[in-house]
Length: 517
Image (cartoon, rainbow, N blue to C red; front, side, top):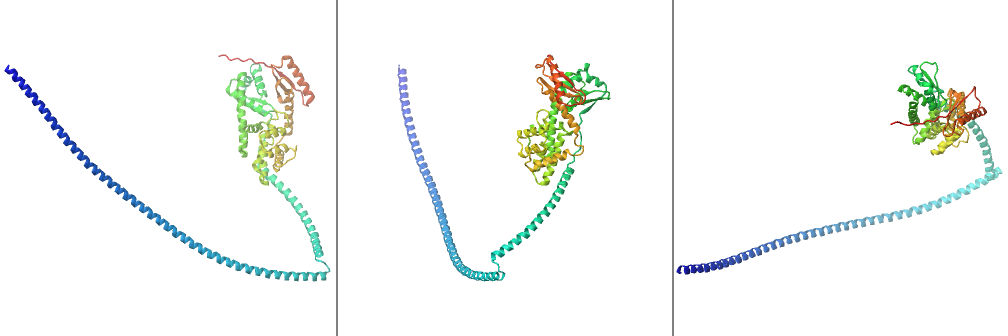
């Protein structure tokens, strides 16, 4: 019992002691916290005062700096105003000096003007005295000669006119005679000089071309079984193949150089290839035709390059290239046109005319001959139409129209082209009249067949001894083909003159082609 009471007392004493200690510790902590807070506040006040002093010092320094800058700027402005004032004073002083100089000059000019007026008055008085003396002398001379001044002047002028008229007439007569001699001599010298400065080789075109063969066995392959190969070649190319006893050679005959060239290249390609049959012949012919077209363009471009002519429509260049395969009295048309262009340029340079325009007119003067086989009309009309189509210069168009005298030449260059054309044509051996007549006859022979309805194309073969007429199979039947042959025969007999006989062959062929795959 006593132990329990003792324990309770000890618990109470401990509890009271713990509470007292807790209260004591809380009081001690509160006291130290208040001390710490006072210390922090004191430190903060000290730091704030220090910071405020630093800010005040910085503000003072900034104010001093701004003040110094302001004073410096005011000082500079004062200096500028001072300099400006000094310059104004100097300018004012110089203006005063100029004013004084002007016043002095004005006074000097006034003095000179007075002197000049006095001098003019003196001269007028002297002139009046001279006029009086002159009139007195004239009156005295009139009394002595019994002639008035007007009559004497008229007599003198009439005498001078009479003498001058005789001298002028004699002078003009002498100068005309001398001018005629000089012009005639100069013209001959100019023409001879132009012909010497441009001298091209003369080469007459023929109507046949010889194709060399590697051996005589090739002739049989060209002919083919039952002659189908040679018939195909002649039908496709429009030429005549002459295979005779001449060793290792085949002759291609046609009046058209373009057809003959295509046929020659086609035949040579077939010989090199070795495969000669109708289908292959047509393939090679199509390929060669495209190559020849490209070569035509090259001929045209080469001609322009040689003459130095630029800026020409590509279609017109192609037409110029076709002249290579046309002839005029046996003379190559492109070679003739280039020769005329060169001669025109040389003559134009001698006369001081436009050289390039003269060359252009000379090159195009026979351009109509490139298409006169395909289109009706004279080469002059066709050439004028071509020039108008490609917007050529009026001088070029007039040169084309007037180079054969069909219309009046309106420019010096047109006359030059006509002269150059005559020079080129009149060169010894340049042309062959019989060949041109022969070509015209063959062209007329082909034209007879082309004008008949249902005819696709007509070819003159064997130098005009055979006319092969290809008709359109969808429009012409077998019976009508015979009628066309008879109609062509009658037209030839009525409208043409020709030696020997002409064989007319009408070809009507229908082809059906399929490709097996």
